[in-house]
Length: 332
Image (cartoon, rainbow, N blue to C red):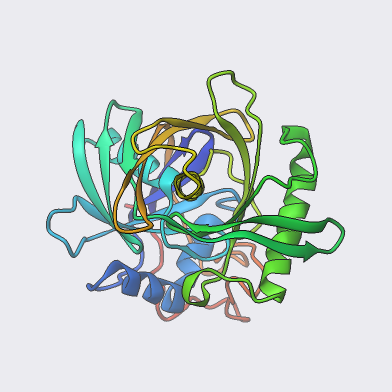
């Protein structure tokens, strides 16, 4: 399996260039479900230890259905499939440019959440017009064991978020373990009480907000992703969800810039335009840098051929035989 690793404002992306599962044709959302249902060992092998780590987001390149799109791309992490991933779109664009497959200018990528436009501004900077985003519920209060009642908004930015300023600790790097614990408790409380996104969608991202460190930023955030890794970047879909809430409250006008700072101090510059009633089209600009190129090997005799993962994430054959759907990953 040929891969290229990059990071977008600190958050890693692993693009699978060759050797991924053969998912056939059809809408990207259907192919993502096929990936999850029949080829999950590919995800586990590529993203989990010993070849990967919990913060890593994968991006599988696919043939697009829409002929106006440069590529299709399916996103995933240590917990499963992601509908959309803003930082990984930027990382994918920079990776494709690194390989000479795209140049500066506008390109369209097809994702399971819809088509996004990506403008490659330079070798390391891209602007993404994300999928339509919106606030679903306002001022939702939920009692959280050990933390009291927490109030926030539920919004969609390509993934589902619970956004709150009720952070139990300052948004500083030394508080990442405590912030992760609190965000995980909030996510669990939402699930126990049946608080969901539209059509019963699970809320798998929790986002805390606070005052920025930089004088020219508007907010600082901490985002806990599904799989319990925190986002090193300001989170593209999370920033989109934040813009939707700001727009709904009348606190940010269309075209006005919002600079979102991450827990590590990196940033996205963002804005939005109104789309359909109650929805916005977010625009995000960030930087990505290629870190490495590699070939991943899968030896069927390796006891961790499909990664070191909990059984609920990727159930390996107890006799360590390769899945019938798995092609052995070999290099030239």
